Amino acid sequence: LGVSLVLSALTLFYYGDTLDQQPDHKHKRSIFSLPPKGMLVFSLICFTSMACENTMYDWSGIYIRQVLHGTKAVATIAFVVYMVAMTTGRLIGDRMADRFGIQRVLAASGILISAGFAITVFSPFIPLTLAGYLLTGFGVSCVVPFVFGLAGKIPMSNPGAALASISSLGYLGFLLVPPMIGYVAQASSLRVSFGIIAVMGLFMIRLSTRIKIETVA
Image (cartoon, rainbow, N blue to C red; front, side, top):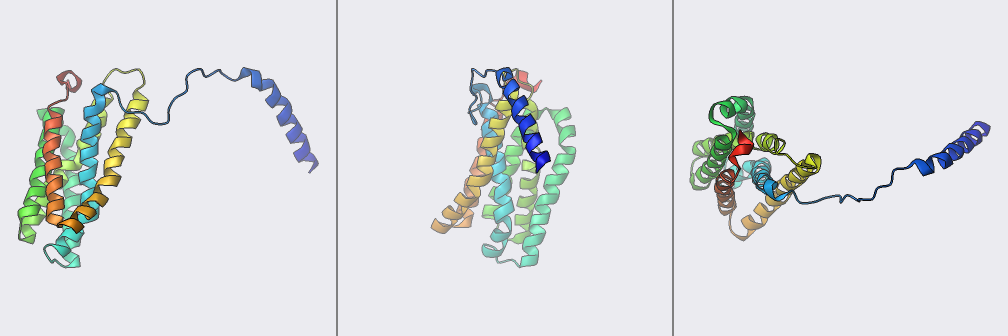
């Protein structure tokens, strides 16, 4: 107890001396802010990609079982196909970007996502649906890493805050869109829900064309 009292007294003594040494923060920073206008396109691409990615996490197996009446084992295989495609895409993504350019790879990612979900929506057969999952996995594989890589090259006064804003909007899509898929499925069907995600893939294609060429060089 005596030691504790001595340490407390010393702490109070030295703390009093350091009060006048605290920096004067004249400008308060907000906890969250929207990214700069020039980076909004990156935020929307990140939002779209992460929404598609988590939709597959949450709904790919349910789609196989409820829509195509597959077994639990088949649903597991379908998810594995998606994950293998996504992992493979991330392994070869840098080589594709070096050869074709990041902007083209992002546009191709949107095409793959849209085509993958479209095949899934219109497919009456599980093997064809697995092909759709394969395309979707390749589509979402490199989008987020490339978006952060491009955004980090843009000159800005506070790059850390801007990248944090992009990440926040991306995770907003990751968290919000899959539950909305459930609401749409209850009102209509899972096919309609997946059709909406296919349209989001088309939106990503359009967004990729809005990236300024100088940021990709």
